[in-house]
Amino acid sequence: MNEYQTIQALIKKVEGFERQIKILNEEIAVLKFENSALKARLNSNSRNSSKPPSSDGYTKKPAFPKNKGGKQGGQKGHKGSTLKQINNPDQVIKCIPGNCSCGHEFTKSQIRLSEKRQVFELPKPQLKVIEYQLLKATCPKCGMEHTGKAPEGVNSPVQYGNNAKALSVLLNVHYKLPFNKVQGLFGDIFGYPINKSTVYSATEKCYKKLEESEQIIKSRIIKNDITHADESGVRVENKLHWLHTATTSLYTYLFVHQKRGRVALESEKSILKKYKGWLVHDCWGSYFNFKKMRHAVCGAHILRELEGIIENQNTKWAKVFKIFIMSVYQMPFEERIKQRKIIRSRYDIICEIGEKKEPPPIKKQCKGRMKRTKGRNLVERLIREKEAVLAFAFNKKVPFTNNLAERDIRPVKVKQKISNCFRTMKGAEIYARIESFISTARKNQKNVFSELCTTFDAYNFLTQ
Image (tube, rainbow, N blue to C red):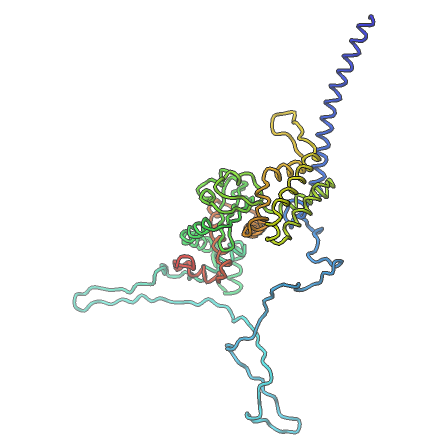
């Protein structure tokens, strides 16, 4: 082999090594990405990710840690609700003093009131049995027989009344008691273990009677200036479905759908197609498909993502952005308006730094979107949705967080933990409509039990 051939062979070897090094570098980048992702997953909790507080387990930090001066009991600013004496008690028992040690017996004129002590006690619960006797009479002139009519709804020889049905619905839907627990509770308290099928038929009847109320709730949410939206996974018929909510300070609307994204949000069940106000959400991409409304992103979600990046990657731009967004939040609204240009400029500068610092997307070997780190994903989203992120800063009505929607959707998680899943789609829809009404009643400071009772009588505070 001459010198020229030797050089060519060495060049080919070098080129081969370069290709191999390039492949190895790509593999190292992917492994680094996967390693950081796995570490972030292990370190994620309710403070730095979208995981719920219940997932923290026994490592969950107390709300008021002792090392920070926290103390047990009601905290400063907490509005307590304690018993207060009433003017007209149901029963008065007078505790009269006995004779004096000298033998004197006190007369009525010598006795005066020293102190009042009231005990709020439950009466012995019992079901009130009302018997309707259908009387009949025969006309002495023509011989025609006439029979009295029972009130509407009294259709069988023995049945539960509307109040009993309303209680069973309230226990099953809102207080999340399974049918057998409702049955046991009725047996323990009233001595009549209500049939499971009776509880289900009561919820089904309530569901049908609330159809008009649901339409009223939907129409009033559509007219509201600020609406919150969220979604959460639920199991229906052993498959993943999604519970969606659109909620305001006075009204709650829930519906169940097989999908989470655009298909669900544009379905007949959703009201977002007709909405034109401010929609507060957690930056789920499908919401941005609606162009007629104005969007506001939940600041709490952004803070949790920033915290996760700070803890797992010690990223400086995330620390700076977290301090920045909190300073804007704590700033008086009038001051924000004055410093609008400075705030927007500062926002752009931090995002620009973050975009440079975060590693570029990694190209997959197979088809699909390129891999991005959590930091890269977040900074790109902050740049893309700048107006929605800063919506709270320059619009007084827009809140900083989406907590309202999260509070309204959280009860279904308790329902799932107790009952595991909904056996049928109809059962899930029954839950969604009745829970929507109960939540709306609570927001309007109505007595939920009373409103369910009147619902069985074909009216409530929404329809009357």
